[in-house]
Amino acid sequence: MSFVTHLECANCGKQFTAGQPHNLCTDCQRPLWVRYDLDAVKSAFPRERLAKRPADLWRYRELLPYADPANVVSLGETMTPILSTPRLGAELGLGNLLFKDESRLPTGSFKARGMALAITMANEFGIRRVACPTAGNAGGAMAAYASRAGMESYVFMPDDTPVINMKETHLAGATVVRVNGLINDCGRLVGEGRELMGWFDLSTLKEPYRIEGKKTMGLELA
Ligand SMILES: [Zn+2]
Image 1: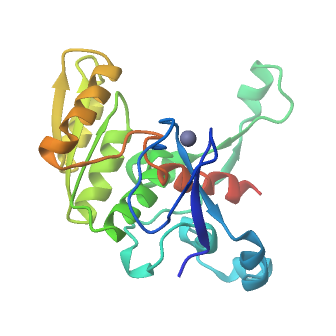
Image 2: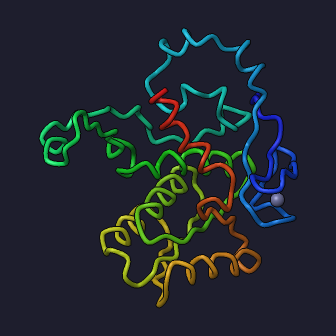
């Protein structure tokens, strides 16, 4: 079970039913937020219990959107450490400069948090093919999680994307398309291919669950 009550447009407040795939608000084309029954979470889950759970992203499961734990797609999303960086801090005139080292996550960046949840939800909905535009490390993350789930993935990258990101995405199992254009051209191609190719569009903020994964960074800090 999950504690999700519904989804809600961040702009106009229109409500959407949970338990089915969504992209943007159908009225105003803005992103959707996932809403939870926070009172129910509070009474079902005493905070002290958290300490006994494994130190990973899934320890916050009452605040995550999936219904069935069997649908979770994971590559081992460990909690990330906070590192003190006194020499860099001194150079910048900052007394206590701290870094949260997200490079410890699978595929080496915070993008893994978002894709872990986005692919988990796609898996829960029975989606078997996903696509996204990127000029950086979101492609590698999506490809790795899609491969883990046995899904096909397509990644559209501008021609000037660093070669390392293209190689990573390809090696993680995606079909990589180099686009002679900018990131918005890549986004347009993903949108245009939705009907033709039958893929689900996992562009940032064009589906509601990547941000549900990314928020765990804040939960770790809280
Ligand atoms: Zn709206």
